Amino acid sequence: GVKKWSDCSEYDGTYMGEVRHGFGRQKWNDKEMYVGEFCNDHFHGFGIYRWQNGNFHVGTFYMDEKEGCGLALEGNKSCFIGIYRFNVENGPGIKLLLTPDHKDIEEFDIGLWFGKKLARMCAKVK
Image (tube, rainbow, N blue to C red; front, side, top):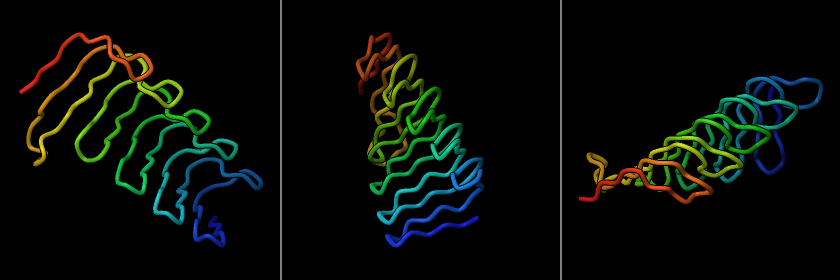
């Protein structure tokens, strides 16, 4: 079903009783959007979250937080592919810094991430 609010946000998807549950799309007035799985009114399972500024995250969510495997693009220049815990990079992962034309990798870091801090294993700088 579809539900719309006065602030122009809307949900289009499945429900369990009165709560979002199953697969759906939640859009907000400020152009943010989540498409994916819901559980008891939370982002829970696989989904895609896109922020108003163009950043996005594709991966698994647990109770509204990035959790498990994911890919995030920030500012059209930085990309992280790896493991998230409590909404932050935490575990094995790769962070790429792209060239302005997006045709090459300017720099990358591969390693274990702990709360956004890298225990560096490999790096490349042009």
